[in-house]
Length: 386
Ligand SMILES: *Cc1c(COP(=O)(O)O)cnc(C)c1O
Picture (cartoon, helix red, strand yellow):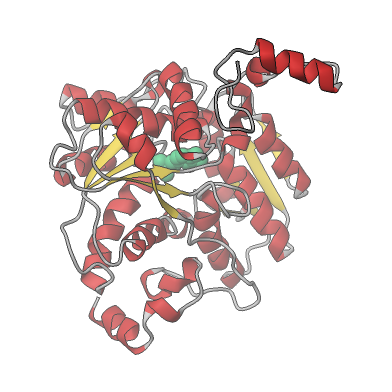
């Protein structure tokens, strides 16, 4: 870290472009020369209305669904992995994916002029697959769950020598997630947060966020506070890490996923045991809300803060409420929710018709409708209609 510190002192981070390469000394590969990067530096948004609803003193949202080319944090991981693939002149970019990674790989490969092949399980949301197709990537859907797709991608990496970002480039891919942690610290003017809640699938994001806060301190990006307590959340129907945490075990027995939070439907997480260790070492907890709670979380965040997030994000909101009720944040230190993807990706969980009133379109029909809607609706005078 001494060399990193010296480099950051020579060229302070504050003046650099706002993308993942801002922290290039802390990443394992140099930025590709020919690619302008618009990946990274998502907003960290104060969430006072949600905080009040959940009974949390200070609450922030790291909004990874915003301003990323494919609307999830996977764009960060792929930016780093594909930089490596380009440096190694690998011919094809590929992955196994529950959906978001497939979209990110397809988009980045297109931007580099490389072909892409993505291997997905059944049940991936239509919006995610539509994005993959739009970028011209080949989708290989297998009959089975993600864990099977993942095993197949290991074969593909061995046999074909493609850049399978989460297999033979996994060391580069996961490193990209550290930039989320660096940004949180920078956006808090060098102060480390107290508590960070993270959705867990394979566990890579969780581990790398943990690492990022320690590195931010060693590199001098963080100047105040201790590394945060880290909270892992998984859906009740696919919660191998949470179950192992509750049972006090060190191993993570695999489960068969039964959840509509597809992006977290990984029954045999590659980094599960290490994520479990990190929950304990950081002083955090693990929690598994139900699918219904995750959907309620999507609505609550949308209604209180104007942010529409995918089901994994709703799950994080639900976990925040449950953990707050358990007293996890009683020290009053800042809580950060890592929201990993946009709500447009999982629209099928919300009934679109619920808030629609259909009228014939005339002025009279509107007046009648508005009157019948009840006496509480505001009018131009600002008082209740009646
Ligand atoms: C990939 C993903 C995660 C977590 O991934 P890990 O495999 O645990 O690193 C979380 N949320 C969403 C929306 C994702 O796509």
